[in-house]
Image (cartoon, rainbow, N blue to C red; front, side, top):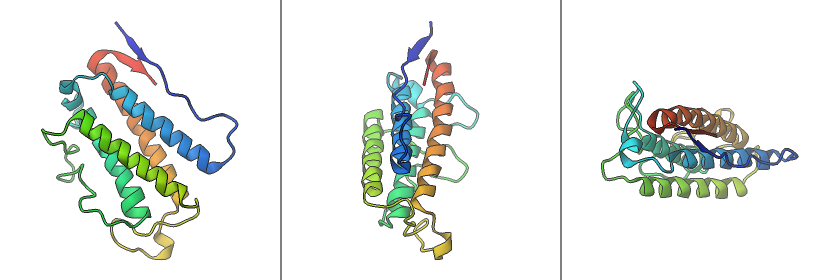
Length: 176
């Protein structure tokens, strides 16, 4: 039996403000990620159905760390002790400790999303990142906020598509 997840609402089709449009779609995809994971068993959240070895809960942690790295560490230049908390070894699946629960990682994800929203609210789209991976690049190598938001948007879109497939393989649930 197929179960369908109802999609979240997209931003209004009449939006003309680029910041509202970008942040509206980021929130759309952030919500879609959580909706796809809701209702999965702990075993399925930790299990990989793909040769690459990543698990849905690891993907959620990865997206939280992506928000942290791009918005707080990169754009704002905030000192972050462990910006790569989702990666233990290059080329390996996203790291997930055995004691990390869905509730813990969901809360971490939601905190990073809220902090990203606060960063965006205080900046302009043409503002440039303070750092890039903990180092201060030349002015011409610093991405603008609009570039970073587009980068985040495409990352979310890709990973939501991945979750579509994984969720359907896990329990037959489909939807946006």
